[in-house]
Length: 96
Image 1 (cartoon, rainbow, N blue to C red):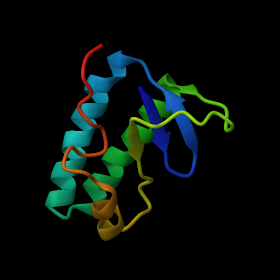
Image 2 (tube, rainbow, N blue to C red):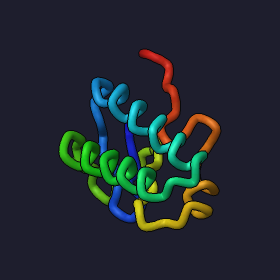
Image 3 (spheres, rainbow, N blue to C red):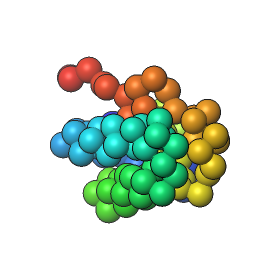
Image 4 (cartoon, helix red, strand yellow):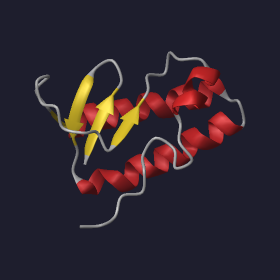
């Protein structure tokens, strides 16, 4: 799975991370729905850190399509709402 960290670049992450990212994504969605910006920012920061630490950074010239896009935590609640899909930031991908 390829994840784009907005403002930073793309990372290839192992499928084993998808469950952890989905859990954080669910928590981020709940925080957004509750308009809890502090909680939302913490979950987005955790997602960024997880992808950065356990993903493989792709070269900037790699134009692979992203399966997921994670926004930075410095956006407003409204800006974040505009970016979130019904599935959150991490879509449920079919198993291969």
